[in-house]
Length: 361
Image (cartoon, rainbow, N blue to C red; front, side, top):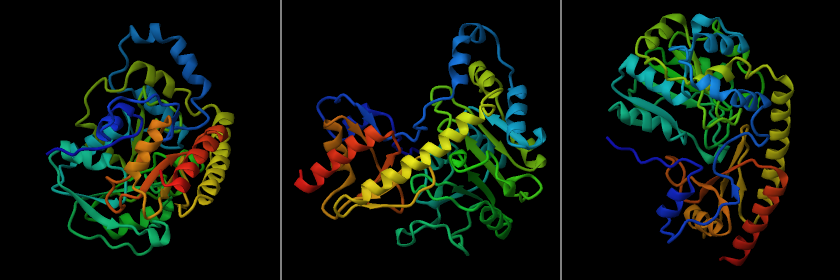
């Protein structure tokens, strides 16, 4: 089973898919959802010691790193898993549970279907959210079909909408025969690393929380993620792990990643301000809708006579890379996802967009 998935940040693949004869130089990348502030100082410190770290075997199951991340989230270690990003943890969940089917709350991150496909698992849409209410996950959301695992993103990718933690837990309780995988990879942009409502004492037994640390801490080349659930489920997932999937640099970084409170507060504050500014600028463009978001990106819908792939190609020739959302279930070909970037980059993109949309280029 093969699932073709687009991800941001790969200008060569985008140029090839659009049929461009050569890959243009990209000055502004609005396609990847990384923290606009950049990585914390701890990353440079770890990399400066990289030669020593990489010549030693890391702990095979990264226990010290896992304990440090558990403490940073206010979680008992026996509830926590660590992995080479959220994707690996999701793969371990599927391997441990061996479900017959899986569902998503669409539109959502295409990586879920990609991991399911690698496990030979069919994926359907358990719920399809509507643009009419800004893709809000409302109550009560009824599941369509008999899938055994359901993926819910909060804040969701590409809509950017946050599902209240209490609603995630209630959704899990209303579906006790299904395992709900709540992906909160963008939650650090909104508040504490672990909301109180997702602490073990309130977490339903059929719910697993997964969280990539790649985007907020701007470390896509290192890869790091955690997950947590009730101990019985965690132990089941741990049985299928492979050793040494978390490299030594990532393990070392995990020890201090959440220690820089000033960096985290700056990241939240600046991202929110930049996101609100960006959404306001997008809304000034003719017939463009910018949807409310609580993450590091904004979902936009283009005018009737514009397709996202066409705009992607036009912008790429001008040095901008954006993420077309034509491959997301629940979105049509007019949607694109735009990462929150610093003000000068926003202004440059808005100028290019205004020129294209008003001229009908």
